[in-house]
Image (cartoon, rainbow, N blue to C red; front, top):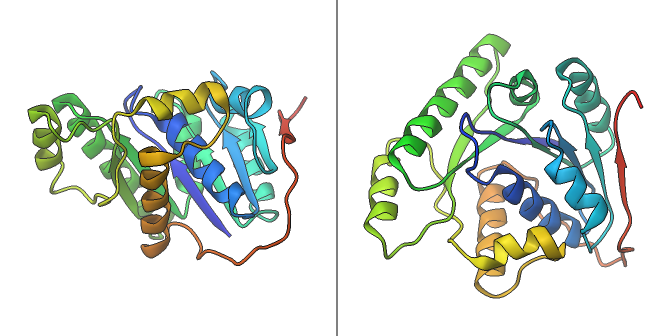
Length: 228
């Protein structure tokens, strides 16, 4: 069982898109994955119930920090992987999700302010881990990268001292389309997603792949709101 929290102190770096991508990838492999939407806006849970087309996974929406803490503990007993999507740090549920995590993934888009906020998030995770008296590793993952631009190259260089994944996501229309189509992207976007999942497994942020040849049903996602 692994709990992977996706967090950032800055709005708009692509947390929900990354959560969708990881959950889609794992579910398509037959992994027993549960998604938790801790963002009050409920973007991930709306996508899961209204648009997603693929193998079954459960999705719960809970933005209250106290109920979220209990929910994470409960669903962690039921899944191989729990992926938690969070809001910015103005929301205390994000801190709860980081405290409960086995690992934290920090999306970062190119930009000077984004590098600063990514560094703040890395520092916060370290502080949470110290308070919890256990290791909670974190990694920055570059998102919406245009390798040909000076901005993207500069942002990657500035993020050099931070713990960072080699894999990243380009600024591709396919990722935005996934949010409307509910389908896993293919082509270059699909290859980037596969590289991301592979590296997360290599560093222990996700469990090793399993040989699951059984068929899986599609177009059924269970979404709940705790306390309702």
